[in-house]
Length: 498
Image (cartoon, rainbow, N blue to C red):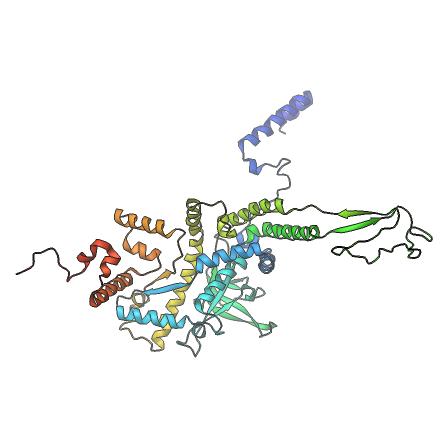
């Protein structure tokens, strides 16, 4: 309190108290409820720190817990598989755009061959699409994955990929390779926080750590991770927001499962009205026709006589399966929401869904997948550029003026394999309407279907030409009444010459 408040308190403590109470209530009204320090938020302690300070002490624990649930939780697996299906799916097709159709086809064929396991992976075990699936899984669970560009002999070209777990970054390294840089979490940064290289801890084939780490220049690697704050340096698991809920659901499912197993069994207790004999109630007597119940089990059709005065109490625990169904549905919807996905995408439960709701959820989910697709394609493009350079150095292609105009010869696009529609007839009708109204172009439609529009036209022309050659009106099949307009040799309505 101020001097005036002190004087007022000396004269009238009640008046001073009312002034202070009004002052505090007025301050509460001026600010946010979320910043209040009252009873409800009294135990809510939070600090503003840089992303690296916040993440550094939690990163390894969260990653270990995420991996544990990856191994043991079907709920978590449903989230991971949803991303696998929609971000990678059946893979991506390269469309080279060098301007030279012959070179384009040559590059596309070389790339197709290089994507085989023996050509793209240093271990020779995974194809390029399989590496992409693993990359997406590690990004969701671990927060990221490191791909090293290895220029080794063997294979189609002297270029392969080596996948590295984020655990293999040498966090004990403090001495930078270049003066003026800083090493944080095994990554060497310049003054602009730009990665300059990675210190990779070495392990033998059985996983034993070696003494020395190896430095890999940043241009020879790609660190696949999401960056959510400007001050973030290393990765953080994408599942951080939902791990506690997934674990709670996992524990709940286990508890309900145990309870249902107990409920499926019938147990009985023998209540003795009188002692069995001897000294004390615990004594056992099996003579004179008396029955000892020790080791007895219930069997179908069993008839058994009890001792005089004995009665049977049956244990029949209630079932929790009915309540569990609605609870799990709510929890799974919250898990999906935490990852930006709909309940249907995570649970694969379409009960109660209509075509419109399922289609709308699928559209919204696509926006969630788009962020990972963009990041994955950026990595694929860097790998493709290394591949093209390796093809030139290995003599697989020899474009004129390559080193002077490299960007021209590296131009490309990625075409993702299309997904099946929920209702093909409705989707086809919508596409036709969009084309006729000008809302979409033919290029847009082909791209959404996972095709290159030039290749689609070439294939259609080939079908029409072959149909005419064989005497089959394929134009009528493909385009209905427009077949004559597409056939250059067809009669255009002119009168026949006599």
